[in-house]
Amino acid sequence: MIKRTIVYKSADTLVRLYKSLVRPHLEYCTAAWSPHYLKDRKLLEKIQRRFTHMVPGLQELPYESRLISLKLWTLDRRRVRADLIELFKMVRGLSTVDVNTFFEFDNTGRTRGHCLKLRKGRVSTDLRQNFYTERVFNTWNQLESSVVESESPNLTLTLTPKLILALSTSSM
Image 1 (cartoon, one colour):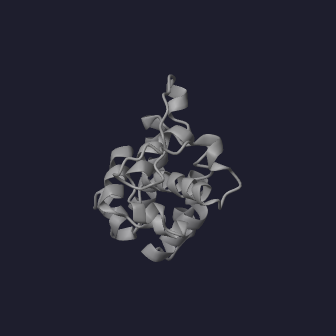
Image 2 (image 1 turned 120 degrees about the vertical axis):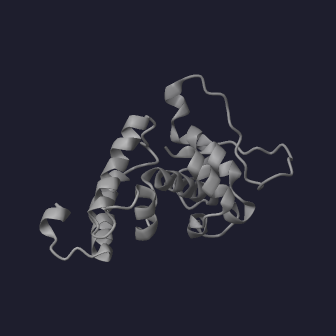
């Protein structure tokens, strides 16, 4: 619809339309439902690929370069980011969901990392392994203490080298 109806196709205008009209549908309720099959993730990412290909002057660039020039992240990275922000809100008491309902803190006295590490339990089924409460452990435990102990969830948006590595290993 954007391609057919918009005449003035500057990159800024198209990105604003994409962020306000398309991306909310792709990211709706990601904490409750996040695709774990590669085919589903590729199908969602294909929509963003098609959008970035529509921007004038970027058609010949590879997908990653188009994302960088438009200042966008892959949808996989945005889902991981949304999971981390939701967990941050639970830990800080900014959410109505009690963190102790779903998570247990690891108080073993280890000195590495931050003091709010989560204890990961054993999971026996593939279905349970992809629940929100299971998929967020490793990335949360790899965050730096300055990010976890910050006052605002907006500080969790900063990309530290460790977080970039964690996000790249969890994406396609």
